[in-house]
Length: 293
Image 1: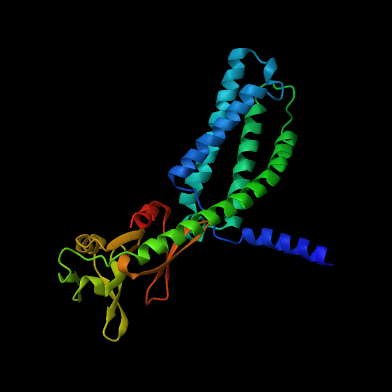
Image 2: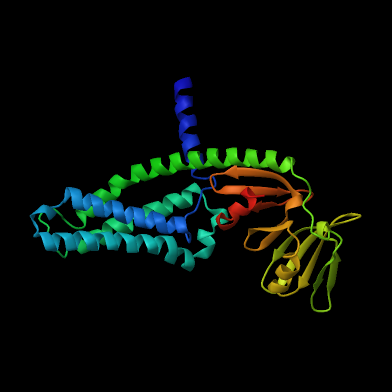
């Protein structure tokens, strides 16, 4: 019975992996590198092994077929990494990316590549290739390696960012409070008939949108919030003179002195803000801003 419980526990643990945060490569340099890497691997495999009777083709047509196959794989990867994320932004939001979404993304990539190559190979005389049967077979063969890769990578990224978050917490605990050159220089935000004036370190963080911003700040009675109709540029210009305000997310500028704790998972870092019940998910683009504090 205990043996069956262990198996059940292992299966549940593996399934839970796909519910956890996962590191997204869409709309990023990493996505471009992944695309080039996959296309290069496919090109090299075809060039070295010459499957499906490619070795019987004349040298020039064979090299052309292999090169076009690599380009097809590259194009399909780029579509998955860049075009689909632009068309379905809510689904591909990096701050809500999970192992199950990565699994879907990887399976979609595999399906498109094998069927895209299959459609192309069906137009050239390959004696050992049958479309769509062989495309379906190779797609099926790819599923287990994909699942294993995602499971292993999630564990590696979780361990990596958890360890780095612990180091960051130790370093932040030893740092002094960051002040402006003139810490008493008042922050002034003017909107349509609205005005908010704060000493810089009163402001905890700001959620900045195109025309409306939310300001969370300390006052003698606790934490307060103000929403002001103010252009984004004016907010960023006002904060730019104070080094404690750092961008960790495209819409959030956080007072570095308000960082209570940094946690890590396979997606990257999350910041717990002191005195505020909110976690800031650090974007891939701004991760170095945290690591360089």
